[in-house]
Image (cartoon, rainbow, N blue to C red; front, top):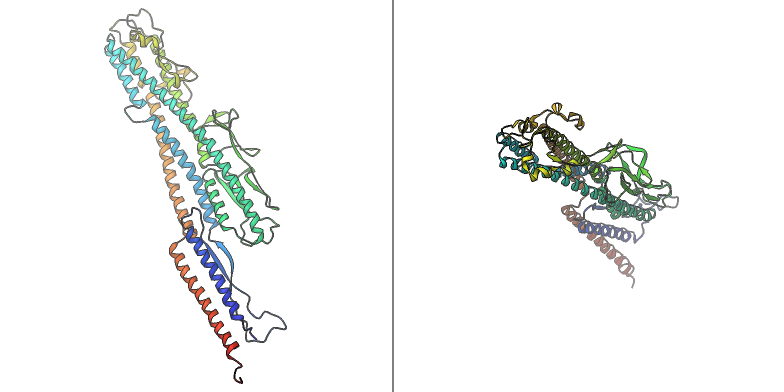
Amino acid sequence: MIPTFHGLETAKRGLSTQQSALFTVAHNIANANTVGYSRQRVSFTPTNPYPGTGLNRPEIPGQIGTGVTAGKIERIRDAFLDRQYRLESNKLGYYATLADSLGKIEEIMNEPSESGLHSVMEKFWKALQDLANHTENTGAREVVASTGEMLAETINYYYNSLVRMKNEIGNQISVKTKEINTLLSQIDQLNKQIASIEPSGQLPNDLYDRRDLLVDQLSSLVNIKVKTVVPKNYGKADPSAVGVYQIELVKNDGSSYAPPVYLIHADPASGRTAVNEVKVLDENGQSESLSGSVQTVMVGEQSLPDFSFLGELGALIESFGYQDSGQVKGIYPEMIQKLHNFTLAFANEFNAVHRAGYSLGGTAPSGLDFFVFDSANPAGTIRVSQTILDDTSKIAAGLNSGDSGDNGNAALLAAIKSKNFNDYITKAQLPPNMNGTIDSYYAGIIGKLGVDAQNAIKDRDNVQVLVDSVDYNRKSISSVSLDEEMTNMITFQHAYNASARIITVIDEMIDKIINGMGIVGR
């Protein structure tokens, strides 16, 4: 027969399970605004029915349920959306950093504007044309000298600003490297905490969330592949236990390096994890306050063969400059080199033409350079010769003589604006890949910068849409809905009250049995 107190035990289980569900609802509501929190729910599981199988089981018409139990408290999370979010977050970190770097160069170059290099160049050419019309005019000569000095200072400003910004990016690389190592250390600590709890059969959901949030942050810095490792000997771990994270650094297409590069390596047998710290080394072997271009990235004892891991760190290295087959590549080094090339081509040709001309009253070719500079750093050191600044009559405007009416060389100097590089006197001294005129070359620099910046902004905005879409889908599954939790709270409250009412009813039944039966013969 069915035990007298069977109903009490069934109702008690209902009370306990509904209470667990209410406590979980309270936890969800409390963390509704916690970043990275995944809502949790109690998995209700019916308990084994009565009676069980066996030869001595009581003969009753069928099995009777014995109630419910909280099977486990699980978090609501979609691993596929997590992987997709981290992939898009990595691209967003790369393109956003790239767009920021290119945007800063645009701010420095400041084209088109009244203070930009192109505008200053136009003033210089106009001053030379005015000199060709009035070679004997002291004012015209003063204007040529002053606009020449303004042109040199503008080039100096561009160079110094680019170098300063490049150095700041070098500091950012050091900061991001420390951030990566800090995240790896925190993830590893959570790995160890999780590995100490899961073998007991528990699911540390809040630790899972904290670890996933750190992995999300890491994914924006470098491209990673996350693998869950559940050790072979893992105690009485629940089948839903996630295990420890093994994190691999991968290329921009998601493929592994050969051999694989692990930021956190997990032993599949024991579950023990080890962190491999990241170091970015420049050509001088320094990892702090980078001065030269990036030579290599070290992960533990491994040296990466390239820098194709995207993310913020990849974009910073690409901006700062890196060694590639003995050559320095990168956004800022290439822009600085273009500025050097522009300065060398312009200043060498201008000086060559100026040296062949006659100064005012001169009886022989001047032989004097208009611009002076250090050939190892032309853009950073170019200036107008102090001799010309002190005495503007030294400007060689004459072509055949120093007479005031001879303006032939001034016209040749002004014509450099539209002179093709192939016609340069100093063609043999031109840097490689110089085509067109000095004006068109500079316009090409600015045009390419604008296109690159626009493409980076477009890519950033496109990826941002994908990130927002994936994040919305992820939050629609994992985030806390207060409306849903309030509905659940009412549902579980009524179920709890109903279980309590069943206990009251059964108590009255037992009271009748104990106190109301067997008193007829008294």
